[in-house]
Length: 324
Image 1 (cartoon, one colour):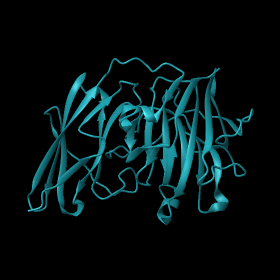
Image 2 (cartoon, one colour):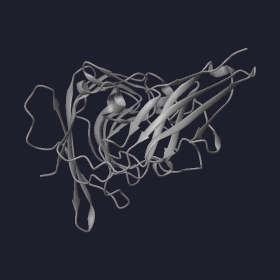
Image 3 (tube, helix red, strand yellow):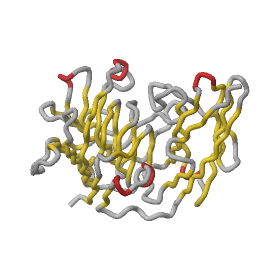
C-alpha cells in the first residue's frame, strides 16, 4: 500500500507577521508524493472544517506534480500558535497527516524605514521574507529560486508601506526554455520587484487565488518571445498594462545588476514610479532610466515583493528606504 509523503518546504513550525504583515494571507507551501498515486489532499485549521486542497501542476501558481499552497486569511488565525493539519490519501487507501504550527503575531509593529533584509542573518527563508509562491533557498549570494515557474514570489515589509525606494542586486542565471511560458497566461519571463502588494484577488473562485491585480507596479527586466524582446519595464498593477519600457537597458544573464525602484504618491493623481539599472560594483547613475505615472485603480500601499517569473534568479540583500 502506498502511503503519501507530505513535504512542507519551510518546516513544520513557521512564524508570520513578526517582521510586518507582508500580505493579508498566510501561505503554507509544499508538495505531496508520489503525486500520481494521490487520491485526495485536504487541510484543517485549528480542528475546524476539512477543506479539499488542489494539487499541481497548473498553468498558474502550482508548478509541479503534487505541489500545494494553503492560502489562509490572516483574519482566520488566532494570535500565537495555530495548528494546520494536512491529510493525504493514496489511491490504494494509504493515509498520512502532518501538523504545521503557524505562529501568528497580529500586533507586531510596522517595520521602520529604512529596512534592510540581510539574507546571511537568516537560518531559513521565512525568517526574513514571507513566501507567497514557490520553492526558494538561501545561498551565499542571497535568495534564489529552486525551481523556475510562474510568479515565484517572496514578500518583505508591510501592507501599510506607501512611498518607498527599493535597491537590490539581481543575478539572472537563466530564463525558462519552455515555449508554453511565452504564451497565455504567462506571456514571457522576467525578474524584479513588485511595489505595493497586499495579496492575491479572488478570481473565478479558485484556490489558491489566481487574481494578481490590483497592486502598485512592477519594476523589472523582462523577455518576450526572443532576445529581441528583452526590455526593462514598469508594469501597472492597475490594469496590467505597460507604463514605460526601453530595450537598450536590460538585466544581462549571468551579470549581477543593481535594480532601484521608487514609488511616490501624488495628490489627486495616481502615483509616480521610477526605476534604474546599473552593473553591480559600478557607481550608481544619478538619473532614472524609466519614469511614469500609474493609472487609476492602483493600490496606495503595500509590501515589497521579490518576483521571479519563469526565471532562475538570485536576489541579494534588499534595502528599503523612505522616499526622500
